[in-house]
Image 1 (cartoon, rainbow, N blue to C red):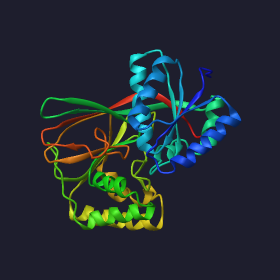
Image 2 (image 1 turned 30 degrees about the vertical axis):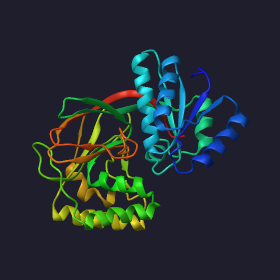
Image 3 (image 1 turned 60 degrees about the vertical axis):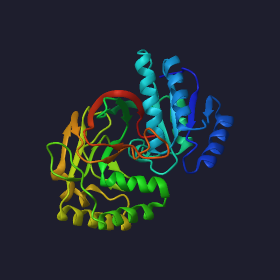
Image 4 (image 1 turned 135 degrees about the vertical axis):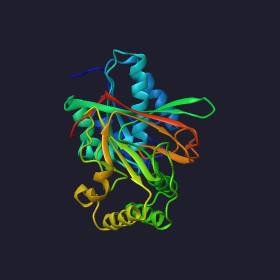
Length: 320
């Protein structure tokens, strides 16, 4: 149980449906009380506000009113605030808004703002949330550290996610972008010690890009991640097309319809070290604009990427 101050609702000004969710949050704050609404100008300001809140409060309760990308920014800032204030134990949750809400749908079993706020106010159903730490060492010697809550990806999936981020189509339009990309025969990328790949990703929850259940054994509090590496072969591209066709008819696509492709390529682990040999984009929780908000973050040849599972890094809501 916690009574450490109000609940902070952090709205993502870039998310689809921002104005509508802002009105809902204001109505809830007026009706229920104990809610502080934060409407930053950008995600950088949102991160700083969350960092300051966590650094100065023992158990801050924070709801990210955003998609998975905005939630990632909130989680990363909360974790960094916790690191400089070891006694702090922040609790984060997601209210569904924006393009993708995998965390809200899979972990919380729903992301309606009113319901999430009520559970937060009742201080019930909190559970540990593992975070995915991503250390990037650039060829020039610079180093950066990022965090993700659900998945980290490189390759074909990321190229399409970047298009979705730019065009912002509906769900059927998103599936169609994936099909178009496969038909173009995606350019393979290489990592040291591996054959050319279409896609490489690690997962903390079973679902990715809204419609695919790819890692059924992934769990937010297991202390391990599920890694999926898809080699660039004609057979794999054909199988991906079949799965994407199913996504047009059934969303999300359950694992029983994809396991024939994904299961042989999946392994569990806590740490991976990748050496990039061809330029490729990096996505964290579906977000490719990690450094510059106007362009995707591209890993250049010679870049070293280290993926680590940080067990129990934060607390989050269980099924709300």
